[in-house]
Image 1 (tube, rainbow, N blue to C red):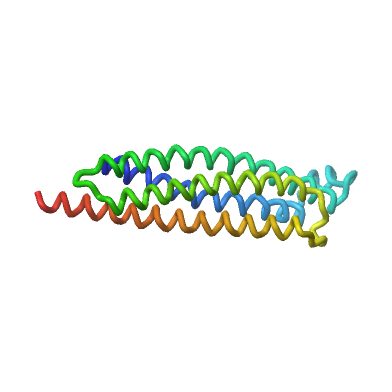
Image 2: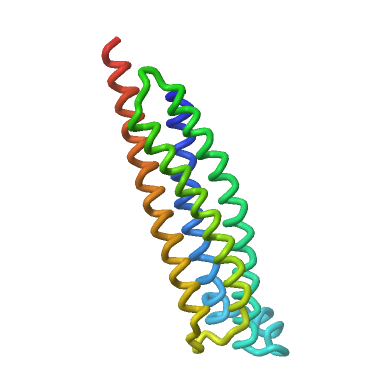
Length: 176
């Protein structure tokens, strides 16, 4: 069970870091492409113009990120259940580890609920000019910040669990 726990936590940590990288790089790629377009890409943009192309490409990136985060949220739910089961199966029973894994699973559930609101609100803002500041945009930023904070807390707890499980494994091996 300890090996399953360590493997699952390691994968979860890597997945979390990769999702953060993908989400940020998708938006930066739009600006990179538009700031130095190849001749063929520049020609393809001519009919719609630079500013409109940016809006359309950012919309595409937003939809891709929504898809990725929806799939990742469901994946994290499965990972969370696996981690809780693995922690419950450890011998000797480690109540602290069980409590932390249950907390992580709760964070994932709250994050899934938050992400639904973020997706819905984000779609309503997709074609609103960025210079406009609205109550909806402020709410979106607040939800996004809450999601990010929960994700960082979850990541920290996963790292802590991984270190604890690894140390316990090392200690058990050394006692033999």
